[in-house]
Length: 282
Image 1 (tube, rainbow, N blue to C red):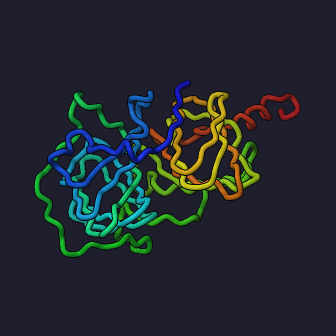
Image 2: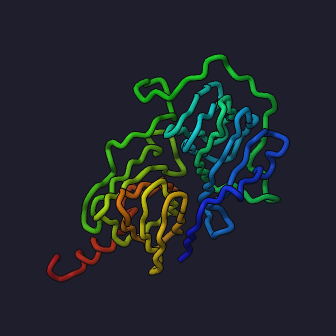
Image 3: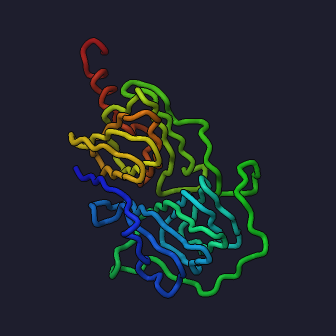
């Protein structure tokens, strides 16, 4: 099965293909794409310098962004938002969007795209729309405002699961899903307490993990990797993987899944299946 483990390196920042004449101070590092065997996921770290901008762009995919540091202004259609650390936003398929940084420090965010962007030289799945007409009002995401859609601020609440056979202590907070407006991927954050663990499982989708803090021993297809902040891993369809936190603080990460999970049996936890097939459990 295909998988990949790596580390985000600032030295690999470069202007993305096609953006040379349509941006200023904008760079990106690709973490997950076709070059490592992925067929569904485009995952990267983006950076926009102070006074930088990105022209109106339209993509033939969905895009999810999660701000890691600094402030980023986003114009999506006719809505303009000021996104800060731990804010996130969904950009639907075919919706024009632009970015700018009016602050004094560089803004950085993690970005997922699905379907996966085409490689340079292939069919062009994006285009630009020229000058950007920014409105006077730039608003912060407000989760309590029912008229504000597809933007939010992350808080640890309503985890998908925290315990179960093969799971000890993981809390996963899925914030970008169908109800939020996404159709091609999920984006979530997770926390795994020291002394806990996530047993061996596999999935019919691709998963990516970007370590925010703490340390983890992640086993993928029988090989063990010690990972810490800014390390990342990608597990292809059917790749067996598990996680055990190490060190003195909880392991926290950002996770993406593409395509979205099926309604049932998206996670095949091996411990559950082993118990089911033993005679004593029948």
